[in-house]
Image 1 (cartoon, helix red, strand yellow):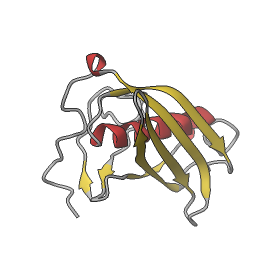
Image 2: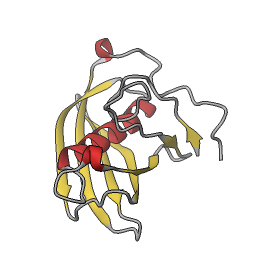
Image 3: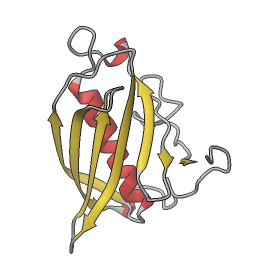
Image 4: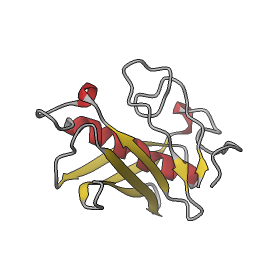
Length: 149
């Protein structure tokens, strides 16, 4: 896996946003995106569990990174989130996402957040459209030398 550079103020993966989640993305050779993370009381919804918006944001960004890595500068236009199990706080969780297909105008991705035992807790599907005018061109494409594994 190769570490993908973060980008400052992003709510999900930036390191300069004091309210952000601060995830680190890794790209696999097959193009999928991986991260391990632990949510805290800062992302709490129901007592002891993450707010659904936090998991939606993580999947949106992770799926978007997969699409960006596939070569498309995009913005989400439809996000479907299926909550299957609550996400416990202060527990190591895993997110996996991948680009799935492209048709004439839309680009699709899918992702999951997994509990420590591998159970799918949250599943997502995103529909994206190209929006290069919104972002810098090289975002998520240049891999850092460190983090190769």
